[in-house]
Image (cartoon, rainbow, N blue to C red; front, side, top):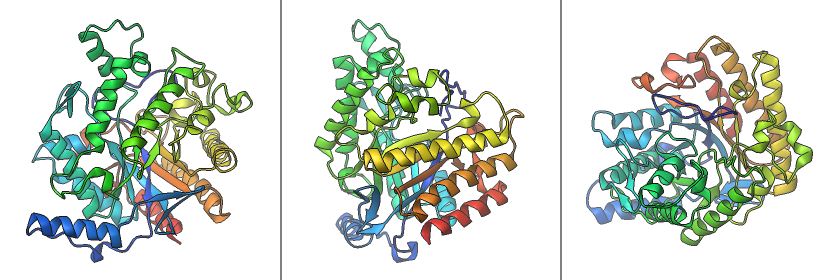
Length: 427
Protein backbone atom coordinates (compact mmCIF):
# COMPACT_ATOMS: atom_id res chain seq x y z
CA UNK A 1 0.00 0.00 0.00
CA UNK A 2 1.12 3.53 -0.63
CA UNK A 3 -0.03 7.11 -0.69
CA UNK A 4 -1.45 8.31 -3.98
CA UNK A 5 1.12 11.08 -4.07
CA UNK A 6 4.25 9.39 -2.77
CA UNK A 7 5.52 6.14 -1.25
CA UNK A 8 4.42 5.73 2.35
CA UNK A 9 7.36 5.40 4.70
CA UNK A 10 7.05 2.97 7.55
CA UNK A 11 9.59 2.25 10.22
CA UNK A 12 8.21 -1.26 10.66
CA UNK A 13 8.37 -2.01 6.94
CA UNK A 14 4.65 -2.75 6.70
CA UNK A 15 2.66 -2.66 3.49
CA UNK A 16 -1.15 -2.45 2.97
CA UNK A 17 -3.82 -5.10 3.29
CA UNK A 18 -5.26 -7.46 0.83
CA UNK A 19 -8.39 -9.67 0.60
CA UNK A 20 -8.71 -13.36 0.92
CA UNK A 21 -9.48 -16.39 -1.20
CA UNK A 22 -12.10 -19.01 -0.39
CA UNK A 23 -12.22 -22.38 -2.11
CA UNK A 24 -14.68 -25.20 -2.18
CA UNK A 25 -11.93 -27.74 -1.46
CA UNK A 26 -12.32 -30.68 0.95
CA UNK A 27 -12.05 -29.96 4.68
CA UNK A 28 -8.71 -29.87 6.46
CA UNK A 29 -9.57 -33.05 8.36
CA UNK A 30 -9.15 -35.02 5.12
CA UNK A 31 -5.51 -33.98 4.78
CA UNK A 32 -2.54 -35.60 6.51
CA UNK A 33 1.13 -34.83 6.19
CA UNK A 34 3.27 -37.95 6.69
CA UNK A 35 6.57 -37.41 8.45
CA UNK A 36 8.29 -40.74 7.89
CA UNK A 37 10.62 -41.15 4.94
CA UNK A 38 11.33 -38.47 2.38
CA UNK A 39 9.89 -40.62 -0.41
CA UNK A 40 6.66 -41.29 1.50
CA UNK A 41 6.32 -37.60 2.26
CA UNK A 42 6.87 -36.66 -1.37
CA UNK A 43 4.30 -39.23 -2.55
CA UNK A 44 1.76 -37.94 -0.05
CA UNK A 45 2.11 -34.35 -1.25
CA UNK A 46 1.95 -35.29 -4.90
CA UNK A 47 -1.07 -37.53 -4.32
CA UNK A 48 -2.86 -34.82 -2.39
CA UNK A 49 -2.15 -32.39 -5.23
CA UNK A 50 -3.58 -34.79 -7.78
CA UNK A 51 -6.67 -35.90 -5.89
CA UNK A 52 -7.67 -33.20 -3.43
CA UNK A 53 -5.62 -30.06 -3.89
CA UNK A 54 -5.79 -29.20 -7.55
CA UNK A 55 -4.35 -26.15 -9.26
CA UNK A 56 -6.55 -23.08 -9.50
CA UNK A 57 -7.18 -22.38 -13.17
CA UNK A 58 -8.71 -19.60 -15.19
CA UNK A 59 -11.74 -20.40 -17.32
CA UNK A 60 -12.74 -17.22 -19.14
CA UNK A 61 -13.74 -14.69 -16.50
CA UNK A 62 -13.93 -17.32 -13.75
CA UNK A 63 -11.54 -19.19 -11.47
CA UNK A 64 -12.02 -22.94 -11.07
CA UNK A 65 -10.49 -25.94 -9.33
CA UNK A 66 -11.33 -29.19 -11.10
CA UNK A 67 -14.18 -27.37 -12.89
CA UNK A 68 -15.67 -26.19 -9.57
CA UNK A 69 -15.95 -22.42 -8.93
CA UNK A 70 -13.20 -20.91 -6.81
CA UNK A 71 -13.50 -17.49 -5.20
CA UNK A 72 -10.72 -15.55 -3.54
CA UNK A 73 -11.68 -14.72 0.02
CA UNK A 74 -8.32 -13.64 1.32
CA UNK A 75 -5.93 -11.55 3.33
CA UNK A 76 -2.44 -10.10 3.29
CA UNK A 77 0.30 -10.87 5.77
CA UNK A 78 3.45 -9.71 4.06
CA UNK A 79 6.14 -10.57 6.66
CA UNK A 80 5.74 -14.36 6.82
CA UNK A 81 9.08 -15.31 5.23
CA UNK A 82 11.11 -12.99 7.47
CA UNK A 83 9.40 -14.30 10.62
CA UNK A 84 9.97 -17.90 9.48
CA UNK A 85 13.75 -17.39 9.57
CA UNK A 86 13.78 -17.02 13.37
CA UNK A 87 12.76 -20.02 15.53
CA UNK A 88 11.30 -17.61 18.09
CA UNK A 89 8.82 -16.12 15.61
CA UNK A 90 8.35 -19.08 13.28
CA UNK A 91 5.20 -20.20 15.07
CA UNK A 92 3.37 -17.04 14.03
CA UNK A 93 3.07 -18.39 10.50
CA UNK A 94 0.91 -21.29 11.60
CA UNK A 95 -1.01 -19.00 13.96
CA UNK A 96 -2.11 -16.60 11.24
CA UNK A 97 -3.03 -19.39 8.82
CA UNK A 98 -5.07 -21.20 11.50
CA UNK A 99 -6.93 -18.02 12.50
CA UNK A 100 -7.64 -17.13 8.88
CA UNK A 101 -8.89 -20.62 8.13
CA UNK A 102 -11.15 -20.53 11.20
CA UNK A 103 -13.17 -17.69 9.65
CA UNK A 104 -13.25 -19.22 6.17
CA UNK A 105 -10.40 -17.38 4.45
CA UNK A 106 -8.58 -19.34 1.79
CA UNK A 107 -5.83 -17.22 0.18
CA UNK A 108 -2.91 -15.31 1.66
CA UNK A 109 -0.87 -12.76 -0.25
CA UNK A 110 2.69 -12.42 1.03
CA UNK A 111 6.15 -11.31 -0.06
CA UNK A 112 8.45 -13.83 -1.73
CA UNK A 113 11.24 -11.23 -1.76
CA UNK A 114 13.56 -9.40 0.60
CA UNK A 115 16.24 -7.57 -1.35
CA UNK A 116 19.34 -6.49 0.56
CA UNK A 117 19.45 -5.59 4.24
CA UNK A 118 18.30 -7.60 7.24
CA UNK A 119 17.41 -11.25 6.60
CA UNK A 120 17.64 -10.69 2.88
CA UNK A 121 16.71 -13.55 0.61
CA UNK A 122 18.52 -11.79 -2.23
CA UNK A 123 21.79 -10.50 -0.78
CA UNK A 124 22.89 -9.19 -4.15
CA UNK A 125 22.46 -9.98 -7.85
CA UNK A 126 22.64 -13.78 -8.32
CA UNK A 127 23.39 -14.23 -4.58
CA UNK A 128 20.66 -15.83 -2.46
CA UNK A 129 20.60 -16.87 1.21
CA UNK A 130 19.60 -20.51 1.45
CA UNK A 131 18.48 -20.20 5.08
CA UNK A 132 15.98 -17.53 4.08
CA UNK A 133 14.97 -19.66 1.11
CA UNK A 134 14.24 -22.48 3.56
CA UNK A 135 12.06 -20.03 5.50
CA UNK A 136 10.03 -19.44 2.33
CA UNK A 137 9.80 -23.22 1.93
CA UNK A 138 8.37 -23.35 5.45
CA UNK A 139 5.75 -20.70 4.64
CA UNK A 140 4.61 -22.66 1.59
CA UNK A 141 4.51 -25.94 3.52
CA UNK A 142 2.57 -24.38 6.42
CA UNK A 143 0.10 -22.86 3.98
CA UNK A 144 -0.40 -26.27 2.41
CA UNK A 145 -0.97 -27.95 5.77
CA UNK A 146 -3.64 -25.35 6.63
CA UNK A 147 -5.26 -25.65 3.19
CA UNK A 148 -4.34 -22.05 2.44
CA UNK A 149 -3.41 -20.87 -1.05
CA UNK A 150 -0.73 -18.23 -1.64
CA UNK A 151 -0.21 -15.25 -3.92
CA UNK A 152 3.56 -14.73 -3.97
CA UNK A 153 4.75 -11.27 -4.93
CA UNK A 154 8.22 -11.17 -6.51
CA UNK A 155 9.33 -7.56 -5.97
CA UNK A 156 8.27 -4.23 -4.47
CA UNK A 157 7.79 -0.86 -6.07
CA UNK A 158 8.50 0.71 -2.68
CA UNK A 159 11.74 0.68 -0.69
CA UNK A 160 10.34 -1.62 2.01
CA UNK A 161 12.19 -4.92 1.78
CA UNK A 162 14.51 -3.50 -0.86
CA UNK A 163 12.32 -3.23 -3.91
CA UNK A 164 13.20 -1.64 -7.22
CA UNK A 165 15.40 1.00 -5.50
CA UNK A 166 17.68 -1.77 -4.21
CA UNK A 167 18.06 -3.17 -7.73
CA UNK A 168 19.07 0.28 -8.97
CA UNK A 169 21.53 0.62 -6.10
CA UNK A 170 23.13 -2.68 -7.07
CA UNK A 171 23.32 -1.46 -10.66
CA UNK A 172 25.13 1.72 -9.64
CA UNK A 173 27.54 -0.29 -7.48
CA UNK A 174 28.28 -2.38 -10.58
CA UNK A 175 29.16 0.77 -12.53
CA UNK A 176 25.97 1.24 -14.52
CA UNK A 177 25.15 4.80 -15.54
CA UNK A 178 21.61 5.23 -14.26
CA UNK A 179 19.56 8.41 -14.18
CA UNK A 180 16.21 7.73 -12.56
CA UNK A 181 15.98 6.71 -8.92
CA UNK A 182 14.03 3.49 -9.06
CA UNK A 183 12.49 3.73 -12.51
CA UNK A 184 15.66 2.47 -14.23
CA UNK A 185 14.53 -0.86 -12.79
CA UNK A 186 12.00 -1.06 -15.63
CA UNK A 187 14.31 -0.19 -18.52
CA UNK A 188 17.98 -0.99 -17.85
CA UNK A 189 18.94 -4.31 -19.50
CA UNK A 190 21.36 -5.36 -16.75
CA UNK A 191 18.89 -4.68 -13.95
CA UNK A 192 16.23 -6.60 -15.83
CA UNK A 193 18.61 -9.55 -15.92
CA UNK A 194 19.03 -9.25 -12.12
CA UNK A 195 15.27 -9.50 -11.75
CA UNK A 196 14.96 -12.40 -14.20
CA UNK A 197 17.66 -14.35 -12.39
CA UNK A 198 15.83 -13.89 -9.11
CA UNK A 199 12.51 -14.91 -10.62
CA UNK A 200 14.11 -18.03 -12.05
CA UNK A 201 15.61 -18.92 -8.66
CA UNK A 202 12.16 -18.66 -7.05
CA UNK A 203 10.16 -20.42 -9.74
CA UNK A 204 12.58 -23.34 -10.15
CA UNK A 205 12.93 -23.89 -6.40
CA UNK A 206 12.25 -27.37 -4.99
CA UNK A 207 10.81 -27.10 -1.49
CA UNK A 208 13.26 -28.59 1.01
CA UNK A 209 10.42 -29.59 3.35
CA UNK A 210 7.97 -31.16 0.90
CA UNK A 211 10.28 -32.03 -2.00
CA UNK A 212 7.67 -30.52 -4.33
CA UNK A 213 8.86 -28.04 -6.96
CA UNK A 214 7.24 -24.63 -6.66
CA UNK A 215 6.12 -24.92 -10.29
CA UNK A 216 4.20 -28.09 -9.38
CA UNK A 217 2.67 -26.94 -6.10
CA UNK A 218 -1.06 -26.06 -6.14
CA UNK A 219 -0.55 -24.22 -2.83
CA UNK A 220 0.72 -21.34 -4.95
CA UNK A 221 -2.40 -19.73 -6.39
CA UNK A 222 -0.59 -17.07 -8.42
CA UNK A 223 2.65 -15.21 -8.97
CA UNK A 224 2.65 -11.43 -8.87
CA UNK A 225 5.30 -9.58 -10.90
CA UNK A 226 5.64 -6.62 -8.53
CA UNK A 227 3.68 -4.96 -5.75
CA UNK A 228 2.08 -1.68 -6.87
CA UNK A 229 4.39 -0.79 -9.78
CA UNK A 230 4.64 2.86 -10.79
CA UNK A 231 6.90 4.53 -13.34
CA UNK A 232 6.15 8.27 -13.08
CA UNK A 233 9.23 9.15 -15.16
CA UNK A 234 7.21 7.93 -18.18
CA UNK A 235 3.54 8.87 -17.72
CA UNK A 236 2.77 7.57 -21.22
CA UNK A 237 2.98 4.09 -19.72
CA UNK A 238 5.22 2.74 -22.47
CA UNK A 239 8.17 1.90 -20.21
CA UNK A 240 6.18 -0.04 -17.64
CA UNK A 241 4.13 -1.74 -20.34
CA UNK A 242 7.26 -2.99 -22.11
CA UNK A 243 8.58 -4.34 -18.80
CA UNK A 244 5.29 -6.12 -18.02
CA UNK A 245 5.26 -7.73 -21.47
CA UNK A 246 8.86 -8.91 -21.16
CA UNK A 247 8.52 -10.25 -17.63
CA UNK A 248 5.13 -11.90 -18.15
CA UNK A 249 6.58 -13.77 -21.11
CA UNK A 250 9.63 -14.77 -19.06
CA UNK A 251 7.61 -16.07 -16.11
CA UNK A 252 5.34 -18.08 -18.38
CA UNK A 253 8.35 -19.57 -20.18
CA UNK A 254 9.39 -21.12 -16.84
CA UNK A 255 5.97 -21.76 -15.30
CA UNK A 256 3.13 -21.88 -17.83
CA UNK A 257 0.77 -23.50 -15.31
CA UNK A 258 0.36 -21.09 -12.41
CA UNK A 259 -1.74 -17.98 -12.79
CA UNK A 260 0.02 -14.63 -13.16
CA UNK A 261 -0.89 -11.13 -11.96
CA UNK A 262 0.81 -7.77 -12.49
CA UNK A 263 0.16 -6.23 -9.06
CA UNK A 264 -0.98 -2.74 -10.15
CA UNK A 265 -3.26 -0.53 -8.09
CA UNK A 266 -5.75 -0.16 -10.93
CA UNK A 267 -5.27 3.43 -12.07
CA UNK A 268 -6.61 4.16 -15.53
CA UNK A 269 -4.09 5.53 -18.03
CA UNK A 270 -3.73 7.07 -21.50
CA UNK A 271 -5.17 4.08 -23.34
CA UNK A 272 -8.61 4.87 -21.86
CA UNK A 273 -8.82 8.65 -21.40
CA UNK A 274 -12.58 8.38 -20.95
CA UNK A 275 -12.01 6.33 -17.76
CA UNK A 276 -9.41 8.57 -16.14
CA UNK A 277 -12.05 10.62 -14.34
CA UNK A 278 -12.67 7.52 -12.22
CA UNK A 279 -9.14 7.76 -10.78
CA UNK A 280 -8.93 9.15 -7.25
CA UNK A 281 -6.79 12.11 -8.41
CA UNK A 282 -5.17 13.62 -11.49
CA UNK A 283 -1.78 12.44 -10.23
CA UNK A 284 -2.83 8.78 -10.27
CA UNK A 285 -3.24 8.98 -14.04
CA UNK A 286 0.38 10.13 -14.37
CA UNK A 287 2.05 7.23 -12.54
CA UNK A 288 2.96 5.29 -15.68
CA UNK A 289 0.39 2.55 -15.08
CA UNK A 290 -2.60 1.81 -17.30
CA UNK A 291 -5.16 -0.67 -16.00
CA UNK A 292 -6.62 -1.76 -19.33
CA UNK A 293 -3.42 -1.80 -21.35
CA UNK A 294 -1.40 -3.54 -18.62
CA UNK A 295 -3.92 -6.38 -18.41
CA UNK A 296 -4.18 -6.92 -22.15
CA UNK A 297 -0.64 -8.31 -21.97
CA UNK A 298 -0.22 -11.90 -23.11
CA UNK A 299 0.41 -14.16 -20.14
CA UNK A 300 -1.48 -12.09 -17.57
CA UNK A 301 -4.38 -14.15 -16.22
CA UNK A 302 -6.01 -12.03 -13.51
CA UNK A 303 -6.67 -8.29 -13.26
CA UNK A 304 -5.32 -6.76 -10.06
CA UNK A 305 -6.68 -3.69 -8.25
CA UNK A 306 -6.15 -2.11 -4.81
CA UNK A 307 -8.61 0.04 -2.81
CA UNK A 308 -7.28 2.70 -0.41
CA UNK A 309 -9.73 5.56 -0.28
CA UNK A 310 -8.41 6.56 3.17
CA UNK A 311 -5.03 7.28 1.55
CA UNK A 312 -6.21 8.41 -1.88
CA UNK A 313 -8.98 10.83 -0.87
CA UNK A 314 -8.03 13.89 1.16
CA UNK A 315 -11.30 14.36 3.04
CA UNK A 316 -12.93 12.08 5.59
CA UNK A 317 -16.64 12.11 4.75
CA UNK A 318 -17.44 8.47 5.40
CA UNK A 319 -20.16 8.01 2.79
CA UNK A 320 -17.91 9.48 0.08
CA UNK A 321 -15.30 6.82 0.83
CA UNK A 322 -17.87 4.04 0.65
CA UNK A 323 -19.28 5.40 -2.58
CA UNK A 324 -15.80 5.65 -4.08
CA UNK A 325 -15.13 2.01 -3.18
CA UNK A 326 -18.39 0.89 -4.80
CA UNK A 327 -17.77 2.89 -7.98
CA UNK A 328 -14.07 1.93 -8.20
CA UNK A 329 -14.88 -1.75 -7.82
CA UNK A 330 -17.84 -1.76 -10.20
CA UNK A 331 -15.97 0.02 -12.98
CA UNK A 332 -13.07 -2.43 -12.75
CA UNK A 333 -15.35 -5.46 -12.53
CA UNK A 334 -17.18 -4.25 -15.64
CA UNK A 335 -13.87 -3.76 -17.46
CA UNK A 336 -12.59 -7.18 -16.41
CA UNK A 337 -15.76 -8.86 -17.62
CA UNK A 338 -16.52 -6.95 -20.82
CA UNK A 339 -13.17 -5.62 -22.05
CA UNK A 340 -10.46 -7.88 -20.62
CA UNK A 341 -12.39 -11.14 -20.34
CA UNK A 342 -10.57 -12.23 -17.18
CA UNK A 343 -11.20 -12.63 -13.45
CA UNK A 344 -10.37 -9.76 -11.10
CA UNK A 345 -8.76 -9.80 -7.67
CA UNK A 346 -8.89 -6.78 -5.39
CA UNK A 347 -5.52 -7.65 -3.89
CA UNK A 348 -5.45 -5.06 -1.12
CA UNK A 349 -8.14 -3.08 0.65
CA UNK A 350 -8.44 -1.67 4.13
CA UNK A 351 -8.68 1.34 6.41
CA UNK A 352 -5.98 2.67 8.71
CA UNK A 353 -6.95 3.42 12.31
CA UNK A 354 -3.85 5.54 12.87
CA UNK A 355 -4.74 9.11 13.73
CA UNK A 356 -8.33 10.15 14.30
CA UNK A 357 -9.79 10.16 10.78
CA UNK A 358 -11.46 6.74 10.97
CA UNK A 359 -12.56 4.29 13.64
CA UNK A 360 -13.29 0.55 13.85
CA UNK A 361 -16.96 1.08 13.03
CA UNK A 362 -16.08 2.79 9.75
CA UNK A 363 -13.47 0.17 8.90
CA UNK A 364 -16.07 -2.56 9.31
CA UNK A 365 -18.50 -0.59 7.11
CA UNK A 366 -15.77 -0.33 4.49
CA UNK A 367 -15.04 -4.07 4.65
CA UNK A 368 -18.78 -4.73 4.35
CA UNK A 369 -19.00 -2.48 1.29
CA UNK A 370 -16.15 -4.28 -0.46
CA UNK A 371 -17.59 -7.73 0.23
CA UNK A 372 -21.16 -6.81 -0.75
CA UNK A 373 -20.02 -5.13 -3.97
CA UNK A 374 -18.03 -8.16 -5.08
CA UNK A 375 -20.75 -10.59 -4.00
CA UNK A 376 -23.17 -8.74 -6.27
CA UNK A 377 -21.01 -9.89 -9.19
CA UNK A 378 -21.16 -13.49 -8.02
CA UNK A 379 -24.93 -13.34 -7.57
CA UNK A 380 -25.48 -12.16 -11.13
CA UNK A 381 -22.95 -14.67 -12.50
CA UNK A 382 -20.62 -11.85 -13.46
CA UNK A 383 -16.83 -11.73 -13.34
CA UNK A 384 -15.08 -14.07 -10.90
CA UNK A 385 -12.08 -13.56 -8.65
CA UNK A 386 -12.26 -12.09 -5.16
CA UNK A 387 -10.77 -9.77 -2.55
CA UNK A 388 -7.98 -9.71 0.04
CA UNK A 389 -7.94 -7.65 3.22
CA UNK A 390 -4.88 -5.62 4.13
CA UNK A 391 -3.94 -7.10 6.61
CA UNK A 392 -4.46 -9.93 9.10
CA UNK A 393 -2.28 -10.42 12.19
CA UNK A 394 -2.13 -12.99 14.99
CA UNK A 395 -1.59 -11.72 18.53
CA UNK A 396 1.96 -10.82 19.52
CA UNK A 397 3.08 -8.95 16.39
CA UNK A 398 1.32 -5.65 16.97
CA UNK A 399 4.67 -3.85 16.71
CA UNK A 400 4.44 -4.49 12.95
CA UNK A 401 1.07 -2.75 12.63
CA UNK A 402 0.93 0.06 10.06
CA UNK A 403 -2.54 1.01 11.24
CA UNK A 404 -4.34 -1.45 8.96
CA UNK A 405 -3.81 -4.68 10.89
CA UNK A 406 -6.84 -6.67 12.01
CA UNK A 407 -6.09 -8.91 15.01
CA UNK A 408 -9.05 -11.27 15.09
CA UNK A 409 -8.58 -12.20 18.75
CA UNK A 410 -9.05 -8.53 19.64
CA UNK A 411 -11.69 -7.72 17.02
CA UNK A 412 -14.70 -10.01 17.63
CA UNK A 413 -17.11 -7.91 15.56
CA UNK A 414 -14.74 -7.94 12.58
CA UNK A 415 -14.25 -11.68 13.05
CA UNK A 416 -18.02 -12.15 12.87
CA UNK A 417 -18.25 -10.12 9.65
CA UNK A 418 -15.48 -12.12 7.99
CA UNK A 419 -17.16 -15.38 9.00
CA UNK A 420 -20.53 -14.31 7.63
CA UNK A 421 -19.07 -13.20 4.32
CA UNK A 422 -17.05 -16.38 4.01
CA UNK A 423 -20.29 -18.33 4.19
CA UNK A 424 -21.75 -16.06 1.51
CA UNK A 425 -18.79 -16.74 -0.76
CA UNK A 426 -19.22 -20.44 -0.23
CA UNK A 427 -22.96 -20.58 -0.66
